[in-house]
Amino acid sequence: MVLNKNKSNKQKGQSLVEMAIMLPIMLILLAGLIDFGLAFFSFISLRDAASEGTTYGAIDASNTAGIIQRVRTSSTAPVDLSDTTNVTVTVTTDGTPCAGEAITVTIVYDYPIITPMIGAFIGGQTIPITASVTGTVLTPACP
Image (cartoon, rainbow, N blue to C red; front, top):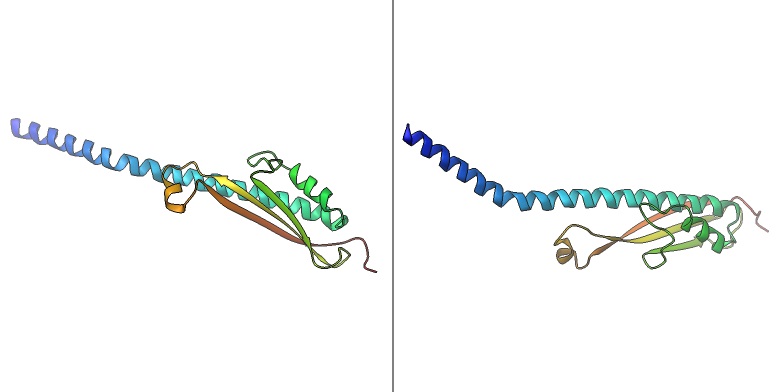
């Protein structure tokens, strides 16, 4: 009986060591998954804001400031689009902004990484996330 009891204690000790080795690795993987999910959610928010700007620009493509204002006021969570230090909005058109031409709204956001030690591997604590939507200008008619 004593041998079985010692064997059980040894197995418990081995399990504790295995858990101590694997727990930090599992927590880093979990944090990485959470980071990826939040980054993807931020990308979806950026894409929706760029789509909002493109829709507004389809009606009034010559009003670049209005398009940028529309994008910046379209969302505050998960990305605060009014933050001009981390979010860049650009509007481009092909040629003159008139009916039938393309308008593109591009948003670049510096996503802050929350996963520890990943910044050392990628060279920084932020990842630029870019969302771009292209639409067709509807008005005014081309001369």
